[in-house]
Length: 446
Image 1: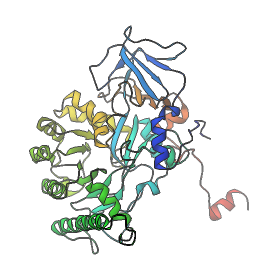
Image 2 (image 1 turned 180 degrees about the vertical axis):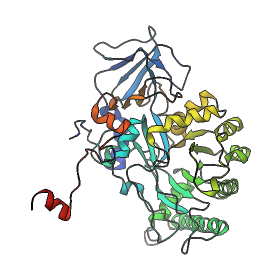
Image 3 (image 1 turned 30 degrees about the horizontal axis):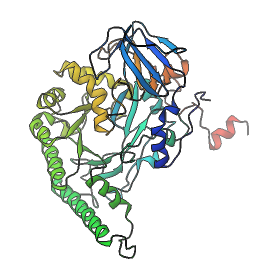
Image 4 (image 1 turned 90 degrees about the vertical axis):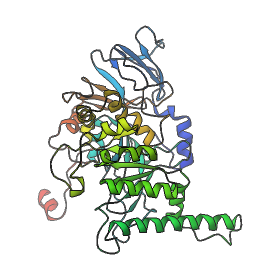
């Protein structure tokens, strides 16, 4: 049985926002002082021997030894010789056995990833083992529009409600997943060509615009209001800029099609994967779109990624694009996200922007820049303790902390299992055998 007791969390969005306001209740009442480590704040220069003070789930102070006041009665965590940096933000993942839209239609904005996530999935534990503290869990990319994503803080919890991370301004729990390219080109009712794919998307956003006009024309007259349409409501949140579009796209022509649609309908977009982003970096920069990149380091895959280049993050950085990283777990294991930034640096990206891409860039992409992504006073106390430099492939995540609570410790055998693998590492938490039918009867001697 998991002995890490979760906090009780209200299930309504209003309650969640109130929890954020007093969100410190999730964390420890007694101050925690982390000392001795090399600190990488992201928001400022690295500190050779730093001090991090957290209390009630928030960062209170960050600085060099001798320059930070230590609260009386604080618990001390001495991590001399180690490295401490903000928790990693994974901007695109499918942990939790998430499901999205089905085969009935290519566009399904009413579908919510929230309704299909198993937080006891072993891959959630593995994400914590990889130092990931915040994650954008997305439906798959087999649809032009596969539904609403959900942003999760990887706290310990009993149900999905314990992990939800709403936008402090809008109360929304995530973005909107879209895709183009080969994934959605299938037999009817799906489109068979790229042009038809774009046409169907246009048609849907025009419908959303018409729905908004009908609502406006009806005013307070309930009799004149159109029938409630959950899909249209979600698309209005996109058109009003409240919900970020997370768009799967690979080829350069598909990328510019996304930018064209974004400009035509005025929605905000983050481009995911962008295998050929290096070919259209200036166009991406001019559009003001951020990019979430996966650094695939093994052969194979789909034909539309044939021109994938490890130099893409460096080229986009040079063009002035905000660049984050993602796992697309299970495409890349959540335990290996740090490694992606190292590969990007090897291919020409600056160290500063690679570390920024693991943390603060993800916070920007998820519309949470004031809550997560750096070690700064007032932000959530999400941090990781590393055995060495984050860009060294030999480095291990030793501890992961979310809002001042330790959610992973490599020294704990049950946590170490998810970090290094072995029997039981693929089971939901807690690992238990699943017996059924004749096999179960045989095992019980029946």
